[in-house]
Length: 305
Image 1: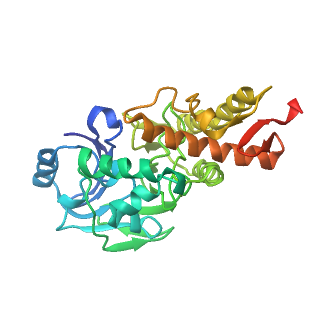
Image 2: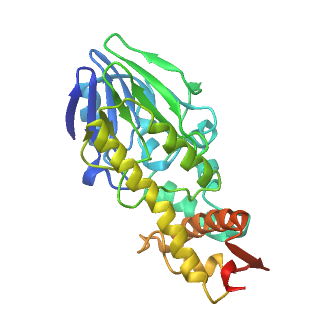
Image 3: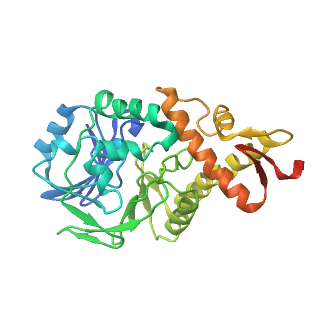
């Protein structure tokens, strides 16, 4: 377990393999007793034991409901567990979380998805003691942590801002080269764009994300990386339109091209569902803009007609 002190009272807990899925970075906030933001920094119970031996964790705050952020919640039964009210049902129930990854037509794959969560990742149902809303402030002796409700990645996705220190934890708006992820049934492309736009207005000098290895320092650098991150959405839209020029394709056929993932991780069938859901969100937006036409379950670029 590697930790980096960002400033007094705010410590980065580096996730395994640089925070790559299914791990994620966490924060420890406090001095004598601590809030732990997200519990997916390791897949090892031993690492959790080590952290608990060195830091007295009185509360766990989940940035959102996804498995790589709540993975070790069950090992913090003696702490108060908190999350946004819209994601609380999916923190409490693995089945509810799994349901947010699949549409009704994906019923058979959904069974595999729940097995992946429960068996391969050993994810367990978690208690939730407190449900917060936008603007709620966790007051500690050494600092204050304010909830920034930033939906889009999930219905209840939140970031956390420390105004005095000008530090922000961006959670899964992670500013990696992959770009934004909005592959859940409760995800929103529109809300992702809106949330990231709001984050640009923060007077932050240090940004930490869930899956980027190193902290980002400097306000201008943070803004630059946010712009690059958002630009991935426009790149994906262009690639979808290019694929639809001169031919009709379904969302499933477009998903097979792996425009977003490039290469599907294992289990491929599950990640392909996320790809398809993101493609569908783009197609809905392109239909509204009049850039594509639809016939049955097939789409084509509008300028081909």
